[in-house]
Length: 496
Image: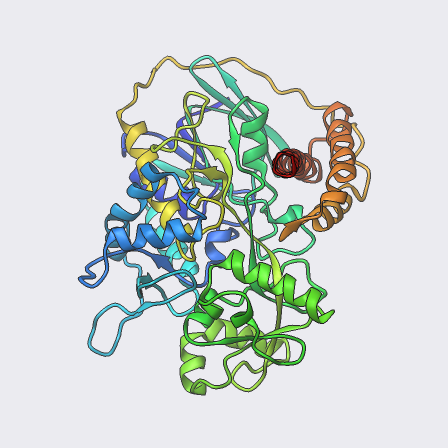
């Protein structure tokens, strides 16, 4: 069994930041389920929000906007940490070579996105996540105490006395690993839906692993649906049209090519994401059509091309010139505000287990994430996790004996289970819950979950991801039913 002091599962912004901030005296392994650049962080377009050398802005303003977007359900302690420590991590990114866009006078260009009252979003054109991931990877891969394991599937994690043992599948071979501290940075749950902006690996694995070893999971039903995903009505992975496009003045139009946001919110297109997504659903019911568009044709075409080169290029390949055409959009699953519940140092309820980034629940997002706070959360709380681990005790004699048993002749899982889960989630819990579909959907998901847990199937990628999706869907729908029942009880009491 291979031994490390710390194992990090996931190589997005959170995992890479944790590796950089861990002591060089510790042996560290970073596990990537796919290629090292395949993660949600790499897809982040808009930027990273934060107050950094901004006299006209303040952490208090940033906190206010975060609370408004989050429905005032945000945790005040962790949100204070997020906004007040933003300058540390933005400054560190700059020191590590991340090249944010600048104005002609050499100052950093800060853009505006929905829900923000100030221009505070640092960006690299419309590919900020890619810029950050590439630069952090370059640093991490030069660290002598850190090893990378690409295309490695975590099949199971078990808590043992003094640490953890992990079962990893790589090149069709299973191998055991152990560590005293583990950090889950496994990203989101997008693939539990038929349509998502998330990458193919976003199947909620870390959340399922943590749940199965007894970690507390919180607010998993707090799911953000991005209002402006490109609507080609065919591809499961929907291309995101960044919040920043509306920040630069784009309009939203209905099937009649009419603007409609003034009927729902005074902030118009710059309302927070949940408000805009709900408004689109209400407008769809009013008009009887799911056809919606984003329109930035009234802006200078050269500005649009230079400000959004990746979006412009990708839309052009799909047959739309965003400088001339209204582009079809519709909400789809984008981000998870809930997850593995952690404290202000990203420690879970299981001693020695940490969770950072989208798979974690720090409470900073409330019930709806403010645009561009995700990369910031990943960096701030992974740094804090690493800083705490650096102060903890390590046992040089840690050497657990644990053997994972695999039946190499076991059958593969039945086909279509993941498709069933996605269809259930798309119907029962898309933007707004469909109460009539929640109960039968939950019953079917529970049946699939139990089949996977009790059946003797081959432990491969299909099995692990289906088990994760079933676990995630089970928790979401169970929570949604509890909320719906509570709301129904409140209504009944009000009638009485």
